[in-house]
Length: 107
Image 1 (cartoon, rainbow, N blue to C red):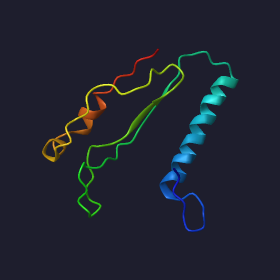
Image 2: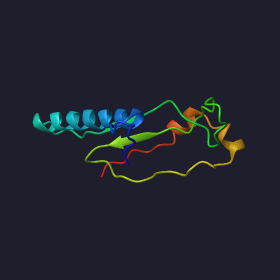
Image 3: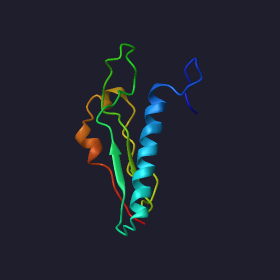
């Protein structure tokens, strides 16, 4: 689902993700056109995150972020355990704990 502004145009955050998607697609297509037969994947992540519970002021930055592993040889799915959604636990989760819990597994 895309968010549209009053003029019917894609707006803000969805527009930025559309740009990212097109750039990633072009990158992998370029690799394909140059017959690069290497095992290839891309890991994208954001250091920006939010807390589980919104505080309503926009200052609720926290460790709940996003990351993606993209590629033809990536075995998709969710790996590991979700941290507890209890606020007292999330206040103690560090970015390092989140980033070091990921697993990349080729097919």
